[in-house]
Image 1: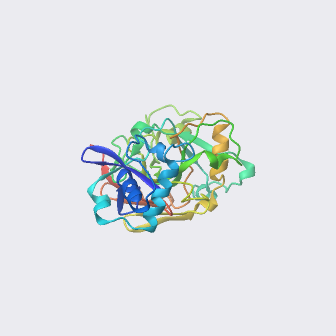
Image 2 (image 1 turned 90 degrees about the vertical axis):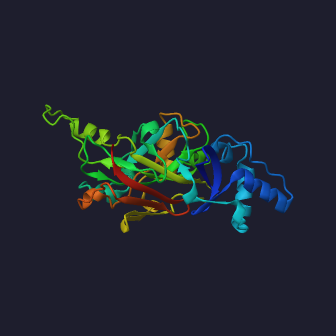
Length: 318
């Protein structure tokens, strides 16, 4: 099952996602009930988490309706084509937005550092401010005025947490997952505030971190795919294109720390809550390797198999 949050006629709605069209969940449930004789009512839900495992009260009904829709293509009157509505970030206001650095050895190597093995290190976790960095599918990435140079892409698989937990074991971690989505961790590679500053030992680290925080620097979507759709998050293809040119082509099988290990690590010190987003790092193929960076007029297409494509045009900050 893939679920999207979208805006239509100035109303926020939820729909089953089928790449180029959606079916609104209430209308889908009504059609399902009429066709099968089984009662399903998804019309009163107010939050996407209600439709998602492991704790969503309507999750089982939603999966049944989604399976029926997949087997029986929706009638034309139920289809809402994506180009007629506005897709939104799947989780409206996550409490926490975590991201990982250096979770693919080949990406570490393309940055000029030695490859890493899981036994030798730990996950490098940082955060972005969700209210200003999360950006809807189709909404522009803004090249910041403060530094318009060396703005780069990073395609990543993101986890959506569905159940509160702390000290979660790797063995149990996937039981806390509501689903998965696509994130593009946009990065300012050359942010260097106050160029006449007196250099300090930690300047490079904070330059790197501050370069992650610009407005619009975390496109997310177009949907959430549940664990029924993605039973193994370590078997997904990742492909990113700049305009029509393929730039990243990898698989989550190459993660140093798999999804379950990332959840275990973060939850040892921080309570994870429903709706929290954890983006699990990017593979090799970022623009810095070849000196290719995004500019106004470009379009990024970030695709993960079984989820979909997150498209982001690029403009200059007004």
